[in-house]
Image 1: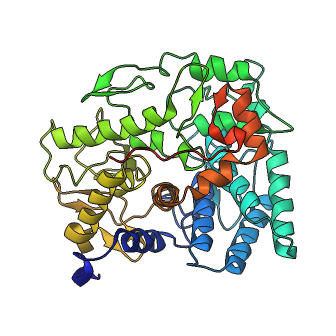
Image 2: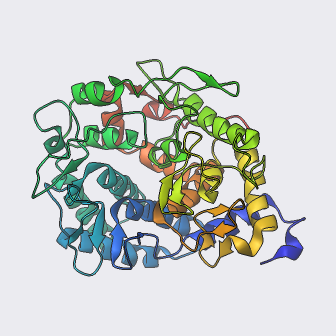
Length: 414
């Protein structure tokens, strides 16, 4: 570690160094074993690959070879009406069951994959043989995904479908949570879109969608949990969706939602009502990840003394000063305890003297993408200018400066 430079190094060095370390080739691996590839995490990894090319960490040619390998694999892997499972065996392409009833299609994980693939389609738009091939294979995958199948003739969007159990799990994608992107992707399909009525009934029309209360002085428009839930609610969907000046016809300001959710989460960590060792203004961030015992969606409502570095770092577009303060603390003061060749470990707890040995795709990928979105808006500009995405968002009642070909503005400094 370059500790001798820690007091004089510029912010750009940190952001480049942290991001490049996290941008490793095995981001898609999950926690079920070395053969398990996470479909959603792969989508995040694809978006991170775009950043790597843009920052010249890898060549465009190397990225194309990797992405072609991915889309060729997906073309042979198990899917169900074009929707992929949560985990795929990276050797055989067969689905790996998440649980007894979740052994088939996962529409939310597939939407994260498609967010990455559509971003890659827009970015790798040159006239070379490999780029044309990549675009063709992505279009095939995109066209095959039957989002409307998961409506099940009931105007409710269901998360899972099983080849053995059908829709028996009966779990609707209802809000507010990490799945806004699922509705936008589903509404954006040219061949198999969902209707707005599905969005209104299953997402907006549920009691868990709107909040309106204030926590630590910050108003939270959406979500019925105290404190807004884990921070990935404001990160996964917004790797591609720019919340700046994004509104809808229900009166929601998504910039306010994502920023205030982050500020509430940080304020809770500073308040530290459970008095866990190590929490403070520099060490904050509760979200889903590996915990002292198992995998936990940490939040103010389920605080177990574990901080995930991704929580603060992937909030960089919303709270850049506070997130940079956390980054420098994690790197300069926690040092080798949470830093490895693959970037920051997934989580740590000073209370229990525990430091995760793992690096999860769904936590590492957002660090890279969201830091870049803060610096240049790269993935926001790519994704928000995709014609199908703009059509789908308009269908659901969203309005954004991108729809009139104006770039979104950055959030105020915090």
